[in-house]
Amino acid sequence: MDSLLQSQPTHPSNKANVEEDGASQIPMLSALFTPREDPRPVDTGEVTTNGVGKGNPQEKAMVNVLASFVLSRQGSCSIETESVYGAAIVLPQLARSVQWQRELTISAFRAYMFVVLSIVMQLLILMMMEKHETVLDPFAGQMFLCDMGAFCTGVDENPEACRGPGGTTITPPRLYSYDIWSTRVFVRESLKAIFPTKADEIDKVADPGEYGMESYNCRLLCCVLFMMTMLQEARNIFDMGWLLYKVPTDAESWVVDEELAKNPDPDHGLVPGERNDSTGDEPQSTEPILEGDWLERIHLQIAGMPMKWKLTNVLILLIPKAMIWQLTVTTGIVFLMETAGIDDLVVNSVALTFILDIDELCCKTLTEEYIRGLLSRVRPFPLFNFSKATETYGSEDILQEQSRQELNKKMRRRDFFWALFPRKLVLLFAAVAWFVISYYSSHCYPAPVWGRFWPKPLYLAKSTVFTFANAFLPSNFPVPTETEASWTMPE
View 1 (cartoon, helix red, strand yellow):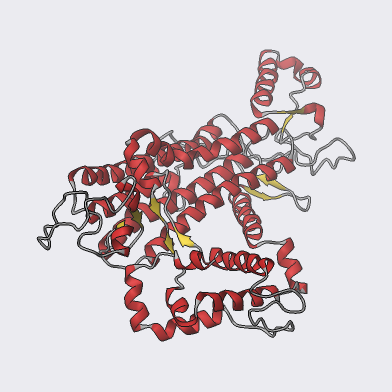
View 2 (tube, rainbow, N blue to C red):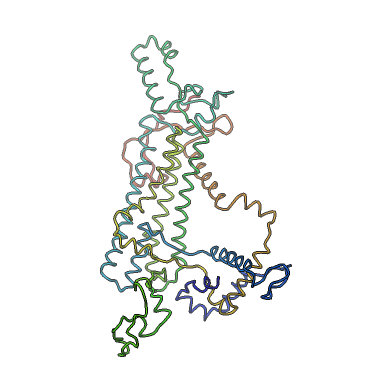
């Protein structure tokens, strides 16, 4: 475990912090490793009566596991190596680190161009989906689904709770999708128009049925599955913002030669027979100091970034990515809530995630293979640094103290609550509830039966013109509609 702690990279900017703020590092470490009362015998380095000591292999294994757990909780900042967003963050900094070499500079410019292309395609898809729900569906006479058909199983039905858009009670044999139901209504109304004297007889014979959902539970389940994917993307957005905040605001190099950093010898790393121009001396040995491929010692490390690059990435990458996420979630939840069939719900919940995969598709398709290789070699930026602490206390003491602290932790009553309701699970259901309630408040109104919602009146748009402002700022730029409703829920 000592090798694990000693191998953690020390950021260049942290070297100054260790000297200037050394006193602040120790209180933070002591707060992290606050000792608790240990009822067990003190570890003196020898095997105690209960078999726990430094010489015990089981004790060492426990120390390694617990200390590794603490390190992993500190985490690190990384990039999306398979996305154009990750390429747009890394490539400009690599080009800056190698003094704007021609190929890397061109690749950096292309990365931003691919980001813009990905954003435009995602916005166009979302705008078309919003146009379909807002403009085209009303022209087809399709009202919002809301709770029509929910829990209408045919057993002890409440006529008020299971009322359909046609004004009759929804029953399983009379439940259809909107396409089929609207066609059956069209046939009935056409027959009544052709034979007006037989309108009553046609109403008795030609029953068009009703339009409603097949399964309310399946609809909610698909919304949860869709939101799980969206939360993963939200985590990527948070990691990007956290990275831009955490990395030092300095023009540091993202290219690291570890062997040269460990051995700052003028002759270190020279090939046989090569002269050292810096000293004018010949190398002492004609054998290569490093064996194997010299590229293996070169690593790409997330490091400091100038303020102008941070602001550029926030404006071009972070803010548009967050806006696209919010629009995708809003449009996706509405799309799923408006899907009546079970099979369509399952397919749509998976297909909607494709929108957020466009940036990865652009990266895999449009970027060069060697660029993707560079991205895969970028090391994350660690958020923990125990170098100063190990110099002060010694890594073995820290590990022993932390192992005692972790081993003494026992389950408490409140821990059972957090075990049953993890933070991410609570966040998942809270996000689903927020967007589902937003759908009901925008498109539905409370029905006479408690707990049910019916669709609001349907108003036709004056034209099919639909702009980005209509799609993404509907409160400020609403679609112009007719003043008279084309459909209202039958009383």
